[in-house]
Amino acid sequence: MSIRTALQAFGSSTFALGLAVSLTAPFAACGEDAAIDEAPEGYSEIGLGEVEDLKEDGNWGAATTCKPIPSLTPLKDPMIVVSLDGLTLHLVDRQGTYDKVFMIGPGAIEKGKSLTPVSTGLSSGLFYARTDMPKGIDGSTPAGQTWSWNYSCKIWWKDDSGKQLPVFAGLPFIRLEGPPTLAYGIHGPIDRYTEANGGTLRRGYVSHGCVRMQAADLVEVYALIQGKKTPVRIQQAVERNANDRAIDIAEKWIGSECQVDADCNFTGGLCHSNSYSGRKFCTTRCDKFCTDRAAYPPTFCVADPDAAGKGMCVPKSVPVDNTCRRYDHMKTKTGVSRFGQAATKADVCLPGTEGWMGDRCRADTECTGGKCAPFDSGVAGVGICTQSCSRSCPDTANQPTTFCVKAEAESTLTDGMCVATCFSNDDCALGATCEVEGRNGQASVQKKVCLPY
Image (cartoon, rainbow, N blue to C red):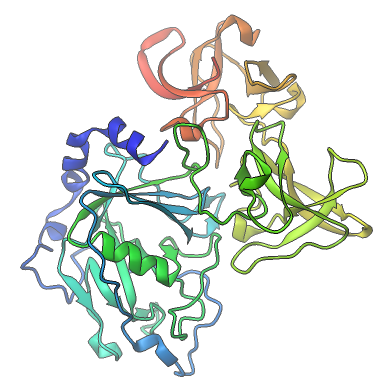
């Protein structure tokens, strides 16, 4: 779903109400005239997450220097969508032409999910960036540390033992307003934070819940949303436009979604089919080795299952990339031999299915519950995983919840069929749409689900 589509879906009244109704009095006290040198009651600082080098020796270089904010005209009506699967932050002016996507490093994966909270489960579907609040500016020593919703210069971080380090490197820190305990924010890259440019970003699941950005990207976003209470939707799924294309940064890499070879705009880029997803992914040919790119997970050269005698580069299955789960219908294949060097093996991401309700499939044996129901997938022999039900369906950890709807004749099921719940079309496999549907045999109970018909 695009941001402009989201705006239509939510309606202006939703944006006006936002999360303010859920805030407690201590948060409401942080207005224009409130002090910003201490946290609201009930607030607790979150951890930092993975960092390459904390530099506890005190040689902090440029980390204690406030970084300049570019002089840009703020957007008239900004909105942000963060996609955890896409590893993107998408900023648009809903009353203008600005529309740009940035790469991010959100919360690390624990028990199958990112530590970054999604907003899609809230009644409003939103958090807020409060750059309409007073600006906070940290001093160059720990004694100069302040508290704010809206930092133009955040320097210090304090660990559980009380030790303070300048890991935020004098960059903006944009806290997200939401439920009373929410303490997450958008901030700089953390790694190599002592460098003059503010550090470098790893595009993967690396933080303790905050959304990390490249320093140059962060100051641009900060300048453009100044003075605004900006709605922020954080969703799990890859964000998609009205033409079902993934909303992503311009520079594609191995594993990026594509439609044609030209979309894979790196040397030797090829757009490879994935019959499970119905969408395509970027790769490149290889004889034995693949070239890796800074800030991205490592890659590996494997035999192309669709081109005998040829190798292709695919992402390795690694925790920093949430194994392969963020890629559409790519599954971890263990112990895959390197093309041209069979004795060397790795766990890699290749087309496949996790087999949960709503996933595309090729055979009943691929599906939990044992049914790959036919539907108009656009690819011969590809169906969608489901199972029969009368009123209820099973749920499992780290997968979308399910719902029992009336079975269509094409499904070959009787009575009802289990489908995945959703927030928008972004959450559904290609060929399914997110619609409100009544429970099988109990039409008054309704949920938004991915309908494969």
